[in-house]
Length: 269
Length: 289
Image (cartoon, rainbow over the protein chains, first blue to last red):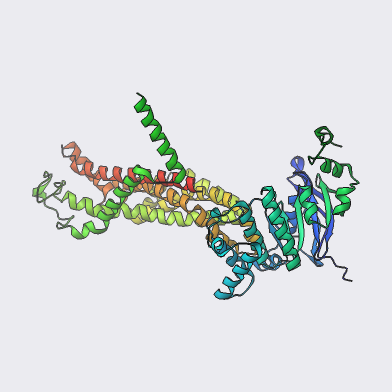
């Protein structure tokens, strides 16, 4: 059995600011993501989920700790374009806001073609074919590929963002609150799409969300973050059904349901 | 009374709709029309001139408009109409060059500052602030003092003086654009920074750049006309609107204000049209972004 995990995060920490204004966004976060696995990160706003994602993707330099992809160090952000591209083929990300994550002047097909051109040497015909394939994979037809982002709905735009990320054929896809901005029925469609893609492509997910129901549907394992630190770690079922940490219990009890009492979830431990 | 109020509401509603859709509106299109006419005069007018704008005829000084001289003559008996038409070329070419050079340099500097950030951004902001603190006209006078009178030194000096006008606006717009997630998405794909800046950020802020270049054109025209007026810009006998206001000054004192009046009117019309168009374009770029 291969003992090197696909992604290993070791004692990751991030501090912003200097001196008295210093705040710790992430402190001593460690986890591993197995090949083909799906790891959820839950926590309230400001718990350091997104900062963790930005450090892994290379948009933020960690203050401490290490990030390893297949045993290769990628702790510090890439220096050159060549390195960025190589890393881009390892890990990709889908952002939360479907409205600002696409260039408003670029047609969807051109957007996908541009990313394909960055990673692969393809002639025009091949590029066209691959763009259509990617469109099919995420459920976008020819007409939508030829339109500008403003002609698409939030859910369709998020499909584009997923297709763009997958164009690089990454082994890990980070989904940073990727369905949070969508309404519930569209959320379900995108989540189903993500499960299908995972089966078809064998890509691993790092799924960041504040929504426990979403995490439950997608993730094998889950870590719970609070104030930048991991408070609980285990299989999704174990973490959500039998939480050990009081904060996880609080998160779970904050979800409205039959006989829900707001007073229970307003008291913080 | 109520009809008046209703009409007022209509006007307000039209204005709101224009702001939203980014239509140029009546004032904008009037300005475009005036500018097209002026540019057309500058482009083809001198070719159609039947009279030499530099032909001196002292016996014909200060003539009133007639068939031979459509707008009369100046102190040296030169045809005013021919000089105004010919002068439009120098009057428009100078500001155009200033705007072209300062927009290209200012935009490049701002995009580079935004992309690289850090100390490069800080230094470029400070340098632009320092240049901004210098009045453009003063810099131009300094340049003519060093390199001699004429359009070249003045245009070069103003081109540098105008860089911060464009650069500061482009920088703030590009900074906003750069912080949008789509730029981060392109970056983690490994798209080159130069490519992201030129192919994605620049087109998205181009409306704003064009609007501000248009406004800068008006200011540059006035600055250059002012330099020519005091005799540091365009040199005699080359016709130029600003220089004509200067030479026409003596005519005003003798009761022949035509030369200064016509030249000033053309400057005012051009600058006003450019400013109105610039304002409409600014609103449009705000509406469309």
